Image: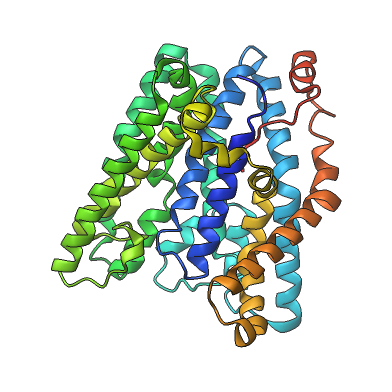
Length: 384
């Protein structure tokens, strides 16, 4: 496998577009874009860590965390600084004072356990970044200390334990001080609820699935069909139970606990997106399964390369955009396209004029000759 895979930027573009559609209230199943990011991060992080495992533990950890820090921290903490300054001048949103300690420490996902939790478009979506950072604290050490045999066993154990963890969380939270909706979202925000997503992505690399699966296109079609079929059945059952449903959530509403959806739905989605990634990175699948070529299109790649910034900025921009533009353009697809282009432009400028300055420092410290040779002349594949 080459170091840079264009189609993975394409899948990032899909993921961030889905999330933006969800928050713009045009596609109820758009929240699954976050699941794509989790599975993709598990794949890429495991791939990077296995490649550099032959270093000393001290150097291995320093190099990994340094490179993650210069990619993620500058934009994230600068954004939080701006949020803090806005609050100092206008005292909005009111929850900023209580939430900032969690935001600055990447523990924001735990705030959903509070019955007094309130939403803010400035930072509600940062729960997923907290989950990713918590994953980064654990996974590099496990990859280093475990042999390949035991690491494979650990991955399978985590994948199997994911639904069990969500079931137990549900038993603890449902019927407590939180409403059923809040309990479902608290389960969804839990770190333990998504470790199996990262593990599913990691299994792609560790088990060398792209090399072993002969017909990745067929796997993708089968996984997608089964996921839609089960979701459709769940949608029908919820309708029979009198639950309010929208047709375009395909039976996968976010944070839903009816029919134990919080137990099984994330697992099915994770498997489906793992099959998606396998199809994208298998060299012969792009030619055999033509629709996948879309993910190598220059437009998709251009969006995917700044998807991190788009994720950080999109909800705050949306809050302003709707107030200014919705009275003129409405809140339909035309409005969304204009909004999407604006978010991309802001993120592109941020990447070109700000984030890239830090990215140049990635190999300034803790560099290795092999790492430099591996990335020479290539754009590096990095997680969100």
